[in-house]
Length: 482
Image 1 (cartoon, one colour):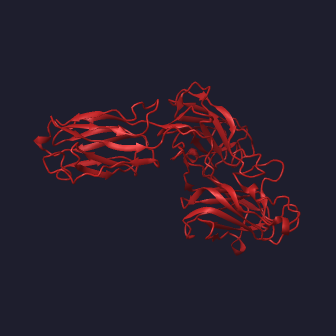
Image 2 (cartoon, one colour; image 1 turned 90 degrees about the vertical axis):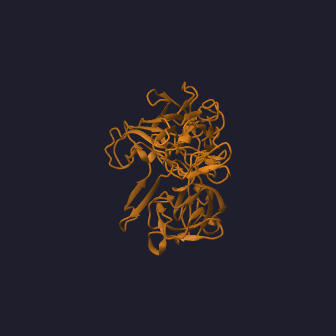
């Protein structure tokens, strides 16, 4: 019997990550401040740092910066904005008012600036404005500059009042060297007694935080406008949302284990969170509290980010999360809480398992079943540098008469087939892992009697050892060509 080795060689860098810092898709630092103290001495909202972080919400004090006259401020974002589907960047202004206008400039390096033309006279912006980078010539944004466009220099809050700068489509930041996972599969969403026709698509809670709002003024009066929201799901009275993490376990680690991102809401605590490891039996998770760091002053009422802990739930790990509304409101465009994303803080990648589907037969088709949760974005592939394909008759000749067809869904993976002598047979990119996570690797063998008795060893090498994957690899699966 001759041995040949087939390895699906993938290496994940995702060890357990323990950090309560959430994905901050907003302004996190002021590069240059405003000149309000000079040109607007009565302005009580001239502190540029009050536009840092996410929405301040409602409360006492000034949680925004007022840009009077031609005042301006430059900000650094916590992520890199990219051109994605639809809206890419939003500026949040607290008062819908066409009389308080401003300009928005963006830059990848804080040196070269591009003006994003607004929808109003002279390319100005007013109220909440969202931008799509397509067609602007801008590919990435790391810095935003806001410039006042009014002549108003009197009053205690003159000019536009900017509360937040929000990235909508952006590159995921790394925590501990790997991207933080987010819920990727909608299991169920029940909108409860909500009668609104808006924002009741449960899939809007999947993926990274990306909610936004656009205000469109439709008349001469300063309060006549319409608002368009996107990318979050409303949790009005009776609403229940169940989501799944297909590639990772959320585990009980240091501090908070899970963060629920809520788009701006002034309603207060509007939901509870439960976890499950089987999608059937649920346990409540402990609310740790608000984990949005206040980068600047004036952000005491930021309710957007709520952290939860598995400790006390009786569960060591979960991959199902349930959000249950406790709101009493069921009318309006956005009743109750607005769930934007669910982010794992302490997590461990799920192992992959192999099993024989149908036997490998010379001249026939055999299958190996790979249970492979999709894990896009943090996969490193190791491909050995080997000699050209084996000559016909010395192994599985590829492509002379043979075929490997791999029905996978992760575009960054590669399938590597080689023998112990170091001769590369095939190195092919794989197409995407289906939502089921189960993949059939199909091998068509040539009608070659010399293949009979050939033993193939299949294994997935994935990530560091953990309580959920003590061997740091999948099971070894042996197939003998019949």
